[in-house]
Length: 175
Image 1: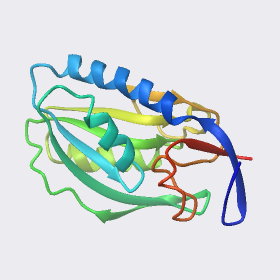
Image 2 (image 1 turned 90 degrees about the horizontal axis):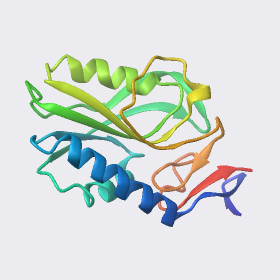
Image 3 (image 1 turned 135 degrees about the horizontal axis):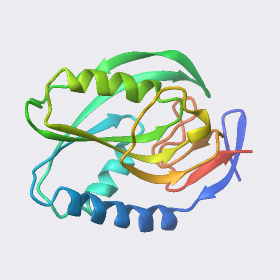
Protein backbone atom coordinates (compact mmCIF):
# COMPACT_ATOMS: atom_id res chain seq x y z
CA UNK A 1 0.00 0.00 0.00
CA UNK A 2 1.07 3.58 -0.65
CA UNK A 3 -0.32 6.89 0.49
CA UNK A 4 -0.50 9.96 -1.74
CA UNK A 5 -1.75 13.07 0.00
CA UNK A 6 -5.01 12.05 1.72
CA UNK A 7 -5.66 8.79 -0.20
CA UNK A 8 -4.45 5.20 0.12
CA UNK A 9 -3.73 3.03 -2.91
CA UNK A 10 -3.14 -0.72 -3.23
CA UNK A 11 -1.02 -2.56 -5.85
CA UNK A 12 -2.92 -3.21 -9.07
CA UNK A 13 -0.67 -3.80 -12.13
CA UNK A 14 3.03 -4.51 -11.62
CA UNK A 15 5.87 -2.96 -13.60
CA UNK A 16 6.65 -6.45 -14.96
CA UNK A 17 3.08 -6.93 -16.20
CA UNK A 18 3.19 -3.52 -17.88
CA UNK A 19 6.48 -4.33 -19.61
CA UNK A 20 5.19 -7.67 -20.93
CA UNK A 21 2.07 -5.99 -22.32
CA UNK A 22 4.08 -3.15 -23.91
CA UNK A 23 6.28 -5.66 -25.76
CA UNK A 24 3.15 -7.21 -27.27
CA UNK A 25 1.64 -3.81 -28.15
CA UNK A 26 4.93 -2.70 -29.71
CA UNK A 27 5.06 -5.83 -31.85
CA UNK A 28 1.46 -5.38 -33.01
CA UNK A 29 1.88 -1.68 -33.84
CA UNK A 30 5.16 -2.42 -35.66
CA UNK A 31 3.39 -5.09 -37.73
CA UNK A 32 0.41 -2.85 -38.49
CA UNK A 33 2.61 0.09 -39.55
CA UNK A 34 5.50 -1.86 -41.12
CA UNK A 35 5.34 0.07 -44.40
CA UNK A 36 4.74 3.48 -42.84
CA UNK A 37 6.46 6.23 -40.90
CA UNK A 38 3.66 7.18 -38.50
CA UNK A 39 3.68 10.20 -36.25
CA UNK A 40 3.00 9.29 -32.66
CA UNK A 41 1.28 11.95 -30.57
CA UNK A 42 1.65 11.46 -26.85
CA UNK A 43 -0.89 13.07 -24.57
CA UNK A 44 0.82 14.86 -21.69
CA UNK A 45 1.31 14.57 -18.86
CA UNK A 46 0.02 11.08 -18.20
CA UNK A 47 1.24 9.22 -21.29
CA UNK A 48 4.91 10.17 -21.00
CA UNK A 49 6.04 6.90 -19.36
CA UNK A 50 3.79 4.72 -21.51
CA UNK A 51 4.96 6.37 -24.74
CA UNK A 52 8.61 6.32 -23.72
CA UNK A 53 8.55 2.61 -22.90
CA UNK A 54 6.31 1.65 -25.83
CA UNK A 55 8.61 3.45 -28.29
CA UNK A 56 11.47 1.18 -27.20
CA UNK A 57 9.50 -1.80 -28.55
CA UNK A 58 8.69 -0.28 -31.94
CA UNK A 59 10.93 -1.40 -34.79
CA UNK A 60 9.55 1.02 -37.35
CA UNK A 61 10.60 4.59 -38.11
CA UNK A 62 8.44 7.11 -36.25
CA UNK A 63 8.17 10.75 -35.36
CA UNK A 64 7.04 11.65 -31.86
CA UNK A 65 5.16 14.77 -30.85
CA UNK A 66 3.00 15.79 -27.91
CA UNK A 67 -0.24 17.53 -26.99
CA UNK A 68 -1.44 18.47 -23.54
CA UNK A 69 -5.02 18.80 -22.38
CA UNK A 70 -6.65 18.84 -18.95
CA UNK A 71 -10.01 17.43 -17.90
CA UNK A 72 -9.45 16.32 -14.29
CA UNK A 73 -9.36 18.06 -10.94
CA UNK A 74 -8.22 15.68 -8.18
CA UNK A 75 -9.98 12.35 -8.81
CA UNK A 76 -12.96 13.75 -10.76
CA UNK A 77 -13.46 14.76 -14.37
CA UNK A 78 -14.50 18.40 -14.59
CA UNK A 79 -16.61 17.64 -17.67
CA UNK A 80 -14.72 19.92 -20.05
CA UNK A 81 -11.37 19.81 -21.80
CA UNK A 82 -8.82 22.61 -21.79
CA UNK A 83 -6.00 22.76 -24.38
CA UNK A 84 -2.70 23.43 -22.62
CA UNK A 85 -0.19 22.59 -25.38
CA UNK A 86 -1.41 22.46 -28.95
CA UNK A 87 -0.29 20.34 -31.84
CA UNK A 88 2.60 21.77 -33.85
CA UNK A 89 3.24 18.92 -36.31
CA UNK A 90 2.00 18.81 -39.89
CA UNK A 91 -0.37 15.83 -40.13
CA UNK A 92 -1.54 16.24 -43.72
CA UNK A 93 -1.84 12.73 -45.25
CA UNK A 94 0.13 11.20 -42.35
CA UNK A 95 -0.79 8.10 -40.38
CA UNK A 96 -1.18 9.16 -36.76
CA UNK A 97 -1.11 7.11 -33.56
CA UNK A 98 -2.44 8.91 -30.50
CA UNK A 99 -0.95 7.48 -27.29
CA UNK A 100 -2.94 8.11 -24.11
CA UNK A 101 -2.47 6.89 -20.55
CA UNK A 102 -6.13 6.17 -19.81
CA UNK A 103 -9.48 6.40 -21.52
CA UNK A 104 -12.36 6.51 -19.09
CA UNK A 105 -15.23 8.85 -20.06
CA UNK A 106 -13.72 9.42 -23.53
CA UNK A 107 -14.16 13.19 -23.23
CA UNK A 108 -10.48 14.09 -23.63
CA UNK A 109 -9.94 11.64 -26.48
CA UNK A 110 -13.01 12.89 -28.34
CA UNK A 111 -11.62 16.43 -28.07
CA UNK A 112 -8.14 15.34 -29.18
CA UNK A 113 -9.42 13.39 -32.18
CA UNK A 114 -11.56 16.31 -33.28
CA UNK A 115 -8.49 18.59 -33.11
CA UNK A 116 -6.24 16.09 -34.91
CA UNK A 117 -8.76 15.43 -37.68
CA UNK A 118 -8.83 19.14 -38.58
CA UNK A 119 -5.21 18.61 -39.77
CA UNK A 120 -6.36 16.09 -42.44
CA UNK A 121 -4.34 13.01 -41.52
CA UNK A 122 -4.45 9.90 -43.69
CA UNK A 123 -5.57 7.83 -40.68
CA UNK A 124 -5.75 8.09 -36.90
CA UNK A 125 -5.28 5.16 -34.51
CA UNK A 126 -5.59 5.26 -30.73
CA UNK A 127 -3.41 3.39 -28.24
CA UNK A 128 -4.17 3.55 -24.54
CA UNK A 129 -2.47 1.91 -21.60
CA UNK A 130 -5.70 1.67 -19.60
CA UNK A 131 -9.29 1.51 -20.78
CA UNK A 132 -12.38 1.77 -18.56
CA UNK A 133 -15.36 0.62 -20.67
CA UNK A 134 -17.83 1.06 -17.78
CA UNK A 135 -16.94 4.77 -17.50
CA UNK A 136 -17.21 5.50 -21.24
CA UNK A 137 -19.69 8.28 -22.06
CA UNK A 138 -18.36 9.21 -25.51
CA UNK A 139 -17.97 6.85 -28.44
CA UNK A 140 -14.23 6.39 -28.88
CA UNK A 141 -12.73 3.68 -31.08
CA UNK A 142 -9.56 2.34 -29.47
CA UNK A 143 -7.19 0.30 -31.63
CA UNK A 144 -4.61 -0.76 -29.03
CA UNK A 145 -5.46 -1.42 -25.38
CA UNK A 146 -2.88 -2.26 -22.75
CA UNK A 147 -5.30 -3.24 -19.97
CA UNK A 148 -9.06 -3.07 -19.64
CA UNK A 149 -9.86 -2.13 -16.04
CA UNK A 150 -12.79 -1.45 -13.73
CA UNK A 151 -14.04 2.07 -13.18
CA UNK A 152 -11.78 2.77 -10.20
CA UNK A 153 -9.25 5.56 -9.76
CA UNK A 154 -5.64 4.54 -10.46
CA UNK A 155 -2.26 6.17 -10.00
CA UNK A 156 1.34 5.47 -11.01
CA UNK A 157 3.21 4.86 -14.25
CA UNK A 158 2.44 8.36 -15.46
CA UNK A 159 -1.00 8.67 -13.89
CA UNK A 160 -1.36 11.07 -11.00
CA UNK A 161 -3.49 12.06 -8.08
CA UNK A 162 -3.49 15.83 -7.79
CA UNK A 163 -0.09 16.07 -9.49
CA UNK A 164 1.65 13.32 -7.53
CA UNK A 165 2.42 9.65 -8.13
CA UNK A 166 3.40 9.76 -11.81
CA UNK A 167 6.90 8.44 -11.04
CA UNK A 168 5.71 5.17 -9.47
CA UNK A 169 6.84 2.33 -11.80
CA UNK A 170 3.67 0.26 -11.35
CA UNK A 171 -0.03 1.05 -11.15
CA UNK A 172 -1.97 1.32 -7.90
CA UNK A 173 -5.73 1.44 -7.38
CA UNK A 174 -7.61 3.58 -4.88
CA UNK A 175 -8.25 1.52 -1.75
